Length: 56
Image (spheres, rainbow, N blue to C red):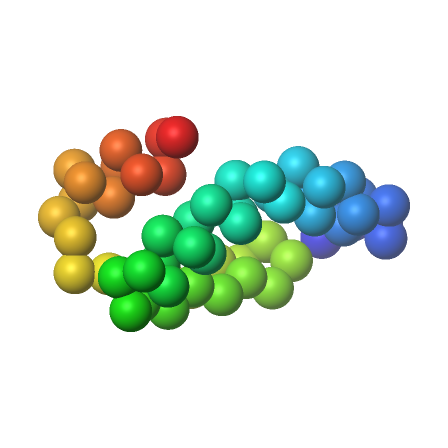
C-alpha cells in the first residue's frame, strides 16, 4: 500500500470509525482485526445488519 505517509493517512481516516466498530464487536463477543488495508472480522449478524453497522 503506497508510501508510509499513505499508511498514516489511512490510519487517521479509519481511527474513529474503527474504534466504534471494535467496541461493537467486543460487546457481541466477536473479533475484528486490521493490518494496513486488510480487514478480518467475525459476526453472527445478518448481511443487512452488518451493512447498516458498516455504513455508520
